[in-house]
Image (cartoon, rainbow, N blue to C red; front, side):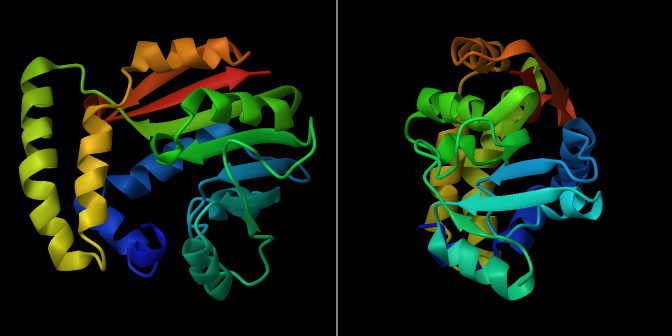
Length: 214
């Protein structure tokens, strides 16, 4: 599915998020706080748009994704980056490898969420950090109602005009509605071993930025 949307993936995200996707990426970069010589895993990196701020900060960043189509497009755009094919439930890295691990808008797409959180924990160095940016649940009830209506009614027609595979965005809307709430995801992070777990809502809770320490 994601192979089919790779070419226009970044454009579609910008349109469907009404430009908010770029702001969310900036917040992720601040939370990850990549430093020179650190090793960063960017899981579900797609075409590696999300990886660029970490590389620009001087870190060694590994964009990893399950979709070969995404990786091919990313490699064409950023041939110098070490793109790696990998399953989020069985990462192809040794224990205690990365100073920080992050995943943006990809955790929903991994079938076994808890196993993915455990794998991220496994490949992170002791004292390292995780940053998860994911669609979540608006905290203000009237806004949540409007947002849900947008997802189920407006998102698929808009996707048909800008995406090469609009059916993928019908799945997107449904997966967002069924995703755990902010406290529920925090609890699952703790269950995977992460400590000092916290989250911050972005754009009224449309997106939540979860953090933890190994």
